[in-house]
Length: 482
Image 1 (tube, one colour):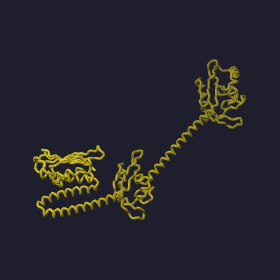
Image 2 (cartoon, one colour):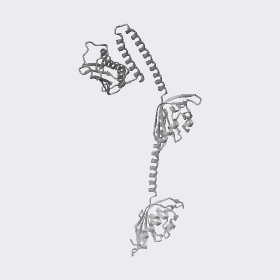
Image 3 (cartoon, helix red, strand yellow):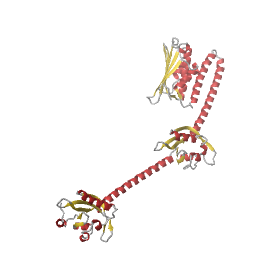
Image 4 (cartoon, one colour):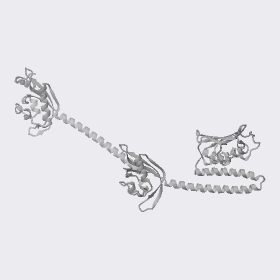
């Protein structure tokens, strides 16, 4: 496009009614032409700005971003001869009353050439985008407010979660505490923990400061090991001596607890989580139960001793009574052995292998290669344990008298299995003799045989069968495990 004064006159006629602002600068950025729309948007009279330098008519601090951005764009047009655009520029201007008003613009600078092609003028098409910018800013601010509100909601939810967690920890039935740092300073202790230590002040104090009586009991040493190693410590029924209150005497307690290390971002131990239960009452109850069971066992043994004494006196006057007394006494010994085994288990349960082995040892004497026990082991209830011990005793006694254990080469194999497919577990024990004398079925049923066949009657499916096979006696016993 060529430039000249005549062309500006033509431009006037073409742009007079245009709503788009236009202005023309020479190479020194003097204003040589503008249309009415430009005068309106800049709040100037045409005669006020024509012939004046752009930065004189619309002053800006040379060190400001506004000045540098506009002058750089105009100089690029002069240097390159190419169009240059400014998408957004903040360029304040004076109001009619002389005050400064912050305005935002979008400008396009196009070169105007002479007939030889040299750039002699610059045409600026400028648009006031202040309202648009303000709307965009308002939108951005609205988004910022929205994000701030979302963050606030998240923080509120996090606070609620923390509050709920604190309430849960505070009301937990077990004691909970958190100690931080190498000196184990209390950061948290719930109601159960505070009750355990007599309501003493804990928060902010080290364990040694708050609970001095535990230092010599080794608990600080355990905390130190957990802190250094990063390995948890689990204690079961550990005895600890604690003051219930500052003025109360020290008291023995028993605790189940865990010291669980908590690692920081770098993997080092930052704190130790303490959680557990006061099991003092359970430990004392178990100890009292042991005392009562031992006393009961003692009384049972005294009763068996009296029965033995009465039996000895009674069998003296009977022909062949010594043999009968020996058999009877052996049965009492087997019963006593079963009672002792159950006493060791607090009369709660006895292991199948232990019951069978104890009964064999009481009858045959010591562990021997003459008999073996294999198969599945498991717990037996007290009634089943006593009955099974008596049956094995009778079987062993018969084997010593008439069966496999009556010879040097005979053996007894005991095989066990536990069936858990039903409503309650059932045991199956098979007694198998081999290597003994030829088996001769008895012509009459003795007491021992009757005891074997009737000794298991604790369940509708319980049974005991005897088979006098040629190779040796086989007895199959089925009984409820509990």
